[in-house]
Image (cartoon, rainbow, N blue to C red):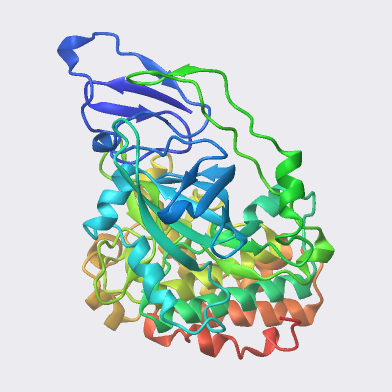
Amino acid sequence: MLLRALGCGLLQQTSLRPIAARMSMIPPQESEDPPTFIFPEEPLALPADTGYGYFQGIPNDVVGPDARFHLQAKLGFGTNSSVWLTKDSQLGRYVALKILTGHASRLNAERLLRELAVHERLSSLPADESKHCNRLITHFMHKGIEQDGEHLCLALELERTTLHSVWNAQNIKFYPIPIVKRILRHILHGMAALHKCGVVHTDIKPDNIMVSLAPSWSDETVPAWVQDHPPRVYNPFQSLYKIVTEAIVSEEFPPPSVEELEVCDFKLGDLSNGASPVPSEQSFIERPIAQELDDQTTDYITPLTLRAPEVILGGPWDEKVDIWTFGCLVFTILTKAHLFPDGIHPIHHSFLRSGVDPNNADSIEADYLLWLMMVMTDQRFPPTVLSLDPNSPNYFESNGDMKCFISIARRPLEWCLRDTGYPALEEDVVGACSLMRRCLKLNPSARPSAQELLQDPWLQGTNA
């Protein structure tokens, strides 16, 4: 990870972009050639009041009330936190301790971020209803060192890995249909739980689908893994105010085998926030992920290729945005490909209206996505939907025609699925596409609930 301190703040030049990166830290008059900092993982020793404040700790540290939590290994880090394998001395088992940055902890206290609030809502449900969500065990505050601020610490159920990590570790193009169905059913159970307690995830994707520790891993096997993975430390490096000498290398549990996936549980995780570009600026900001339906904090949700049309059009939205995303994910979990691409395919340039420049793809990215939604679902946006959504005039004429694209060239979902080479029986192609169509309704009120989708004929008979 590389950060460059500028007069306008810290700009990161890798895929992970910590929040509040534009806050001034080195006045321009003090340095014509500001320093560059290279961080092997999370940017340690950057102050909380500049948008950072990552926890600076090492394995064998003890944190929490009554010295309850004993850090064993670092499992990873994200935009707003690091995650540690931890022994809970009170419960006598291992947990994942998510330690938020000082900045994110303050935002949670001010309810500008809602990770703790969302977890507390989820905790109000019976355990059997919420078992397909990564659940909170307890939480506490920990005083950070130097200028890191106070850290909100969330003790969460320990999971093995994410679906995305499994895909990266295994050279398997397509997974068997029974595994795909099991994953989809478990996602729906997790969605149903969140929606029941008034929460919308808004960022369901393979990175946020957790794979359970069981059945081949347990509290009995974790100590052997810890012993085989003693702490590793990066070489010292310069941060803003000091040389960091104890930056711990993240370790990962080994991924489950295909056979284990047949019996693993899958859960929705990461109810915090990610980093997303501000469309009008060359910068990145926080994007809260999970949202409380009765107190939404932003309309800037979900990666564009998974974003429901009502959000793109600036209209009101609810838990049905998760249903749209789930419809897209049916295709992705079957094929490991996106249903809606993140760039304009040259074959579609001929459908652009005269005067629209295909080389200026960024300016018509949303137009293209809305057009593809109609192409692949064989629908037109209902006038009642367009009339409710304030951004509709940016993309549509008053008669419902698109401003940037001409005719609608129908391309059924079955064609898209077969084009990936997925070796499915015809009945599975038909069943999967029928499930997707139920979710991908342009009118959000026409989409079924997660609970209703659990009764979908194609998902029945699954070992889940």
